[in-house]
Amino acid sequence: MTARLIDGFDREITYVRLSVTDRCDFRCVYCMSEDMTFLPRQQILSLEEIYRVGRVLVELGVKKIRLTGGEPLIRQNILWLVEKLAALNGLQELTMTTNGSRLKTLAQPLKDAGLDRINISLDSLNATRFHEITRTGHLSDVLAGITAAQQAGFQRIKLNSVIMRHRNDDEILTLVNFARQQQLDLAFIEEMPLGNISEHQRIDTYISNEEIRQRIAQEYALLPATDNTGGPARYYRMTDSQSRIGFISPHSHNFCGSCNRVRVTVEGRLLLCLGNEHSADLRAPIRAHTDNDQPLIETIINALPLKPERHYFDLDETPQIVRFMNMTGG
Image (tube, rainbow, N blue to C red):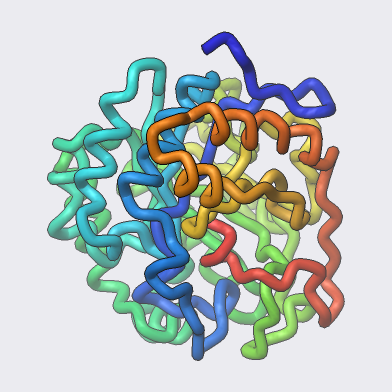
């Protein structure tokens, strides 16, 4: 194929986040409500259909795929999908974001299947608080998963932390020090107003990454890093550590100008922007044309002009995007 994925603002799409499930074994307070209704099985793409989407996107110039959820490691036969995607000619990087709860047993099989890198969510190093934030998770499982990923040989493992004021903002340096001790990267992510949660008001818990950066700078000098992972994080380094500190700041530092990403939800929706509802249905051409990729290709290419220039998040009590993060795809 010679077609390239260029949106209406001359941005080339080279990075796709493929969701493999909307389900999760955690119920993080900023991500979903405590009582969730998940998609019926017939509405979600099969692993074979997800692979087909990934293959077509790589043929159209996508260089990086990140598998997301929900929690991707609860999807049955996920190792099959990892192995199939990893073998695609032209794909330069296959990564995954996980809550880490199942990595103790799956880290080595994932590495053997061809997964290149892994991001692990970790919002607290206090076991009681961790359970409160995740509602169902256990810190010991995640720490064991991190160790297993290190032992499996994954390089540049990254922790993702969502910091909430008066909830876990007293752990900013604790998390930095843990990353330094374990020689891990760490990215702080501002809480995103996706879905209507009742556990707290986001305007009350919001803390900007600039404030987090200033707190860290009181202990460690942060120098802008020159390397780029292809994602939205802005990275800093420390002179006495191999760990990088990243900041993903959808509120305080809009990163849309250079956006090279789209998402595919597990129900086959090509989501063109994290903070908008612009999308296209890929499930229909996938299932109507099982032996012909052209309708799927045309649907993807024709959707690109719908990709907006940027998102506009606000923190009022009514979220502008009603879908939860688990429905969005990581």
